[in-house]
Image (cartoon, rainbow, N blue to C red):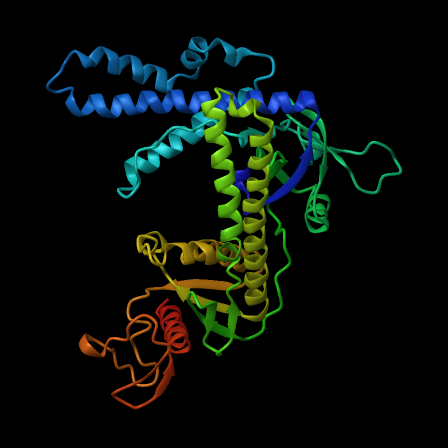
Length: 426
């Protein structure tokens, strides 16, 4: 069976899983093993990074550098120095994926000047590790691999169990859309990496990476429409047709409730520390921690659901979507706007829009954001100097042609025109 990288179409399916006590133990063991391997390799590479800077003036580091290079490149050397990695419950693929993730992080650090030096993974209430599906050389479907669905009886129309490496058969639940995706693409689909995780609320999930030579989604019908969208904080966005999507401000609306829960949690932590009690053994602290985590998850889920709906509506109604290429990370440095920008989640919106456009056969492009707001969409006059439109001014009149503009609508028109010019230039 072909590898995932050789296939054209890729997607992922998220399943809610319900492990037994023994299976929870295996997940915890593999989370610890993968975190330990990642941190050990990261410590080695941080030492290497520091020693290579001064080895010219301190030749005594040469022997240590040679040993760290050997440990870094040899999995056998790593496993031999960490005996518990040979434990029966440890999935060898979780170790391989931890090494792969470490190498990817350091490769990005070396190649991307804006990336900081990789840090350590901290142990917390959340757990995660990655494993992989394997197939025989003559496998025809994913049912021939070590990851497959299990029907407990012939009367079942849909499976309720999935077989996972090391964990075994485990009960799962998913949305009807995901179930249909899983059951209708079994013959020509390969499952690749599987991420098994537990969130801060104690719920377990499995995310299956899937690849196929046939598309997972049917292309949406063409509408012949195109639109430019200008992101803002008053609403989620305004398009070049004058339509806007509401900014639901889910984080701001829950801010007081969350702050109250976090203050209570902090007081409980201080009290437990004064009495010399472990936080893991303090039942009231754990109850409050769970309440706080659920509030945070509700905020995150509500925001994600809203963005999924808005991006799907855009892709369904438009053939071409153009947006600004915003540097959200730089915009977040403005502390007056950082909370509002993170609450509206522009980066996630752009990511979902791009994914859906590819999946459903539509076109999504980004254009430079410079002067999209300061340019008149009628005559092309650019506001500069004393004419510059300050932040917060929603309406203005062009001094060159006298046209009255709504700030965001004018910017959306300019964005669409730049997108069209970009396409016409190839």
